[in-house]
Length: 199
Image (cartoon, rainbow, N blue to C red; front, side):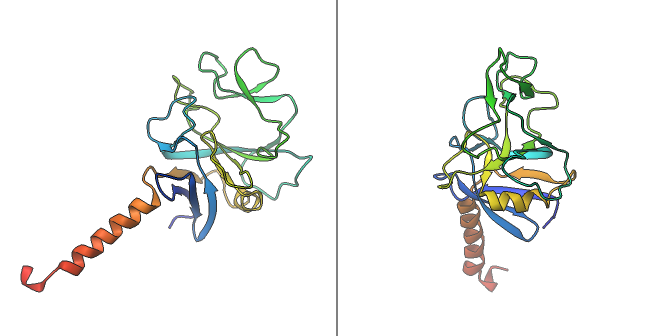
């Protein structure tokens, strides 16, 4: 298994809970309330399926000490936002707020954005209404679904952020783990039913 591929897969189609795997390491995570979709659009609360680069790290330097990292990193300031308005030329970009366009505030009280890894989704360049602000960030205590990001326990994300680098890709699988396991069981059943007389 590649140490440069962070694989995220939901447990089943009925839950946002899943696992993220990098090499031989594995962490619990949660994905979007809209599931994992290959046809993501703005506002659907879905996590996009596919393989994406990891761009940079944003963090609250008043709340944590960033470990040694291999991606560009920048402290979050109180005026930082992320534009989620497809009509704006700043769509899916870091912006200064107040801002005339719809945006998400990065300076949050709830701790979810204390540590953020920006995913290179729909950003090269941003197009249409395919979605914005896809991050790896801190999960709520109950791992409740996100609005499309992938979220981790804070300590797990602190561990992960030190392991990733410019060559690391995020691979979000559209088929849940339960389906993959069922397919594997089906394959094994075929072998169980196999009779040498079939040759």
